[in-house]
Amino acid sequence: MNPIRVFLVDDSAVVRQVLQAALTQDPGIEVVGSAQDPLFAWQRIEGNWPDVLIVDIEMPRMDGISFLRKVMSEHPLPVIICSSLAESGTQFAIDALAAGAVQIITKPQSGVRDFLQRDAQNIIQAVKVAARARIRPAPTLPRSNMAPPANVLSSQRSTEKVIAIGTSTGGTQALEFVLSHLPATLPGLVIVQHMPEKFTAAFAARLNSLSALEVREARDGDRVLPGRALIAPGGKHMRLTRSGAQFQVQVFDGPLVKHHRPSVDVLFRSVAELGGRNAWGVIMTGMGDDGAQGLAAMHQAGARTLAQDEESCVVFGMPKEAIRLGAVDEVLPLANIPSRLAQLTGQSHGS
Image (cartoon, rainbow, N blue to C red):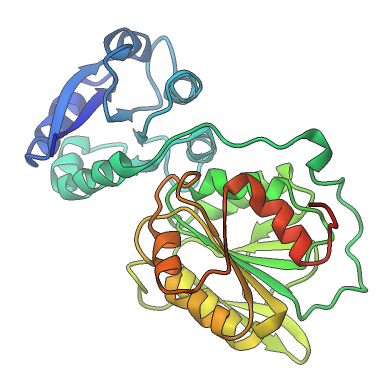
């Protein structure tokens, strides 16, 4: 196996030096170069592309997010943002994820050298995950297939219908695409996107601004309503509950499940138990196998289940495991998931 070729872009010589020392502890990683700003970096990497870029945000001549957008538009490749500005769900972090960053490493404001040395193994793991990502431009749909304008939530729709979606690495862009192409009349959605604590509120706000749906970070006791999408808060599990005939969500602390909190399996298992045939499940891009067993439980309970196909996934881990378990009714490219959900839930009669 050839080593993973990494290029570092940071205006701090200390950060570049310590990052290189941390990464080269692993014989499977080679730091092939570094630069103190994006314009110099572009000159160095153009035509000799690395496998992974690690990029700061605040740099001279061009900021890291503008550089990330340039890379994604001209030569898409896995980019890790490593910055003290990308903490606690800041707009910088949300913009970086939306622009195509595979992962975010939050540097502290002080003690950066100690942090990078102490967290060397986590940074190495982040590079290995990024190197496996399949980066490509987001799909587009014809204008006629775009979601209609938001309208008043229909009181005629059954509140006992629910769509559950689970995703991880690459999921921020996948969810943005799916939710921005769904009609506001769709049954309520409950969503787990693996994300750090405090990132999900800003992420939900961004999706809300782009979608005909009402999208927000879930609160304990929130109703699952047509036209509403509830995203599990980072650092908390979320499961479907029922109050009489009405679906709600419970947001709660608990141990990590499949190394995650929130866990897709926790959500999907609750939907299998309460939703049965009135539920639809979707598993999308992500590393690992969180959600595969939960989707299998939904499938066994009579729910219709979809998985994103390998070609359109950034990381074909979670869908692959669900398919292997026989949990999936249909495997679809990302571009087809919104229209298929609309068809399955009776919102569309198109092909």
